[in-house]
Length: 344
Image 1: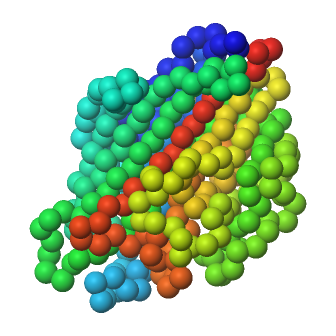
Image 2 (image 1 turned 90 degrees about the vertical axis):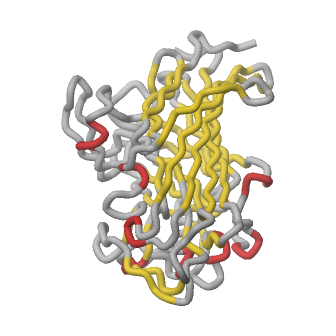
């Protein structure tokens, strides 16, 4: 059996229920800061953050129709609202952690957040839980470190008059670098789909689902120094009417697979979600801070499983993101990392 030379280590912090460390073979493959306080001041790229109340963009920072009215949100990305607004969930202090063992003896770390009615313009008070589960699995003789995230959101019982629904779309915004260098150059990538949402000049979907030029599903390509430059939402389930509000009863499916020959490290991202944003890190720009080196363009890549962009404003998509009183929003993401048997 091929084994991981050193036990994988994980670290999380209360701000944003952030993933601070996912180390394999003594290498932390997520970008972040050595000092927890630095996340409060310098985390403009959203390193490791839980993104909510709604991930990605909402067109014109406006929800057109919830509770029979429109809602104006914080515009923090040109005309749009991005990643929950100016102070999204990734910037907020969660409660916890609560640490324990699940029934299957896997280690569990739980963070919770109460997001009040009006938070960044969103209606309704909601309760959110983020549960990290760590484990080790053996697949085809290969030992793999596994980190699973479960998200759950409910509307509180007591709400302001006229509020019975809100919008939710949560993801994790970790950046990964599995290579030996300062950028992702030389990383091999395989996406499980090439379907994506074409966007307008403000990065809002135009409403169609089309193949992404230059990428084929399940066909490996290599990330170079500057190309390909990707920041698009890829579609695993092109049938939005079939997406439940709580996807956790669906089987985990592979979204993307990555490897780097120089380190022997592999990373595979799984999810129950219908889509994922794949971003090759063009706009990362963080200076050296408290012993953490500077990070620039393409220092890491993101795979952000979620619902469709701007779904709340699209009649055919909104069912996947509108949470009503008495319902449960849920989703799951899993990362599996391992070192080739002949890895460095």
